[in-house]
Image (cartoon, each protein chain N blue to C red):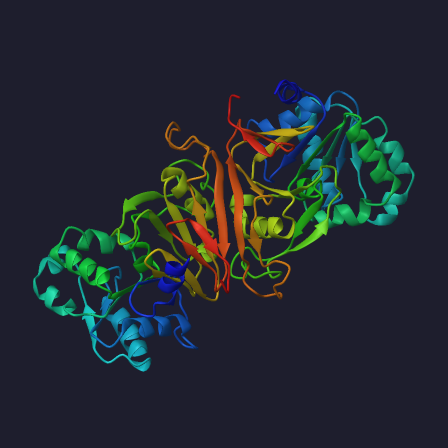
Length: 275
Length: 275
């Protein structure tokens, strides 16, 4: 318990996963937290997920500058060829924070995985550099990602509502979904643990974030974070079912985490606010 | 187990709860099941929930006639004064099936509860008469009902997304929600078990139904049924939280039941298809 508390008390580095649509005009509490944990080294705004990288860079550069960051760098990677360019390695050198903007998470993973740049970013993260992401930029951090799929109608059809793709894998056994309540994505969260019953699936509301230190995270922002744990599952038809068949899943564990509460990824136990 | 199997094998009476928008033009599998379980006595179409009782009566009378029912009766109760009229008792006498149409579940409970007619309907149900309902007509059957509330945005605010009202209480410890996947109602289902942790909350998809015999039910139709069990909950801020605060709820158990699977309300255990 002491180790947990110590880790939760850390104030630099780690990971901040934002459910999208974080407050950009008011108090900007979540982005302030990003700034606070990033330290004073170069801060990278990585717009890999976006179809409007320049626009995203302008928006976030302005905000982060207003919140006190001075050494802002745009990591503008539009194709995999850009990711392979050694110039990018210089750009991220010594970064104390890296922020992945939203868009499409597959644009992040297909450009970045398997490159030297990916290895460098991972080294930075493991060395104490804050890695943060919003929306698609958050989803990309897990071991697997939820991609596509309608949120309604076909939601209970096996294989019908979404597909899973490999994420950057910065955190083990974790699947991250965003815009959670707002896009009503419980079915795909449940589908994700049906397909990955050893894993934890997080559904993060808009303007809500998890702040991860080593093995545990806490919730900040306006909304809630859903945690679906597949380890308790006793029965599912996920493997035997043909695509289009209705999903069966028994005994999934579901936690709803409010602001100030937390979760330990090792013990898989939620932590009440104030503990 | 023998008792369970026996009860599941029953083919008359019991209760059929439909998530709304059941197929009315194609195979009409769910409504066929209603007819099959109703037997040949008078069949009551109760339009209490509807603002268009005549229209609902026409729609269902035509379908049930096409499916082979001959003794159809319209229970047309527009205000509580109608429910108190002794003529209604004659209408339901000897009924072998009662079908509650959709609309607003509060229109059912506020007209019916505490009346002689309510007692008579309950007696009929307990004596083996099939009671079925679709949409609001299904919701009304539980001990408590979910009423109103947005399905998104405010979904994680305690007290913000819905309120609970007393249902007809034909089934103990059961809260029933409908149009489940289609209206993305997981938050209010979870809120319902947070408020009633001893209870079971069912979220029934459209064109999907549970067929209840005594202590267990099975799933029929096109979609899935979500079952949230609050008994495993280890922490919630539901009582201490002011309205508008984000909900915390740890260790809820969630089952997704596909067609052919079932659930025992006494043991609180799901039953895989084919068992």
